[in-house]
Amino acid sequence: MTTTSIQVLNDKVIGDTEAYWIGQYKVKGALWIHDGNPIRPHALLTSDNHSNGFFNSRLVIPDEVLLREAATDLLKIFAIYGGGINLIDVVAGPQTGATKLAELLSDQINGYTRGESFFVSPEKSKPDVAKSMIFSDEERDLLLGQTVLLCEDVITTGGSIGLTEKAIIEAGGKVLPFVLALVNRSGLTEVNGKKIIALINRDMPVYEPHDCPICKQGSEAIPAKDPANWVRLNAVY
Image 1 (spheres, rainbow, N blue to C red):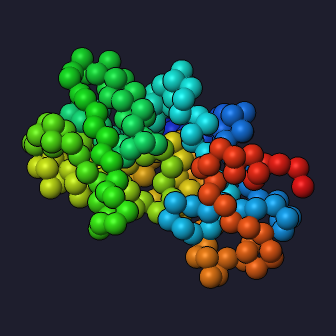
Image 2: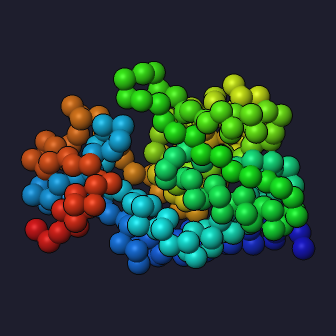
């Protein structure tokens, strides 16, 4: 098989995988797009910016069978892009969205390599201090000298991933040049030079509050992750 044929085949695998996972998010009721009705509220993100679309991975992550399938597909695409599964000592994903994904990726890496890969999941710093990701003392000790693969549930700006990478390096770990994610909605292909490998790549606009066109139409911005607000976003208007 020629190099071109292999590339075409790989592109088809990646494209088919993305179509499948968009379908799974829809089945779970986890993909929301504003329909332009100004009576309908729109998404307030954790960054305090606004958006007309939202992937709610909280509705996907509790399904461990489905999330394990997601981990399998991510590692397949990782291999297509030249990622070395045998190089991974640790998988790191920020709390709480990527904690379970990091665990299942680590489990599957051990299944492939018969190794002793483990996962860590740092928490965000308190709101009243400078933004950072914080590992426990035990995790920090374990990271020393280890090679780490980053993961995330949804990449919006890449901020949490950048802070996680910084914390790993400060703990003496080495970070591989990849980030595995369920969803990349950022429009970016890299975060801090790390290639984004996502099941779904779907750019969704993000607006600063003072410049939000949906607000200007009279729509209210509400925190999309709140279960009651998710019902409001998807209600009939």
